[in-house]
Image 1 (cartoon, rainbow, N blue to C red):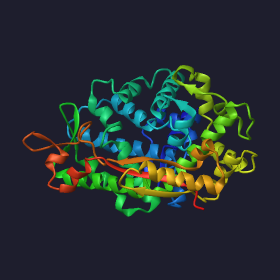
Image 2 (cartoon, rainbow, N blue to C red):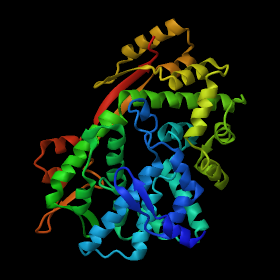
Image 3 (tube, rainbow, N blue to C red):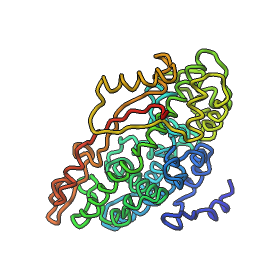
Image 4 (cartoon, one colour):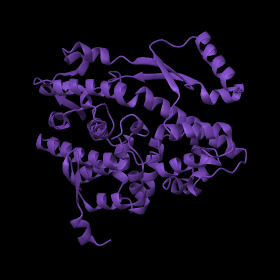
Length: 409
């Protein structure tokens, strides 16, 4: 690659932060790699655009934004006297850039159907290791920090904790693109309040109100956006479509699909057989493979697959009922019986059209990676103890809701 050209292309214009500077040539070259470029074709919020029409931003946007915030965090910490070497800074930029590289299209729906015992975090690590080979070991420290093995814990906490650069970017970005103003956070202020104590990331006492606002915003974004009942039913419907497609493919039925998608439909993949070749194939899989296939499946001669596919593409989604208490067996049975009588589904078919489960919203978990407030005298308190905001203590408790989905008619 022409190094001169590389220097000229080191600024990106972002709708949230304005101009973003790419910190070094290695980061630029990683961004240019096909593994990372795939993230331009992976939606950050899956099917949420069916509820919020503006939510079409990608994981590429989010990763670049996270690097920008990480540069700010490193500058602030160094200004406050925290020793961070150039090598450590470069490694933490790489780690945050690649933290989501293992996400597939419509991540959680696809993960559940295509892989057994392999999460997107596992796949991110496999991508990092493959890129480390390609770039002759230059990602080794980044990988150690990403895994939490490096002795300076706060560097890992900047990437993965309850107040990391990942969360600070996606809350601000998702709020912007959905138009849900209540989810807006002051990431600038939060980063300026960061410090390190005993090798742990902490927040200065005067930043407590910004942390409270961040936790409240996170709760609102989960109920109003990430766990919105229409987005929820769309994701569950997609899971059922992929489950049916996989079931038919494993029976030897040839479905119309891209070559890349066909490979994953025709085999069961787990930790033991996820090969380097699988990783290469996965690096070509994106939203377009899935949506193209679903459009084709509308006219496929399997009644279940075609009905579900048509429902998603035309946004004629099942009815979803959400409540605070679990559905009783008799409630579930009554709904299933009505659907069965109306559409003449068998018991096996019924599972594709009537489904239920639970969702959980926990804005803050005080039992792990907790947010510590540091006082002028050096003492530390968990944010729930430090806050005089009664809601913050309440928000650390998980809240469960229960849903059932079934055909509208």
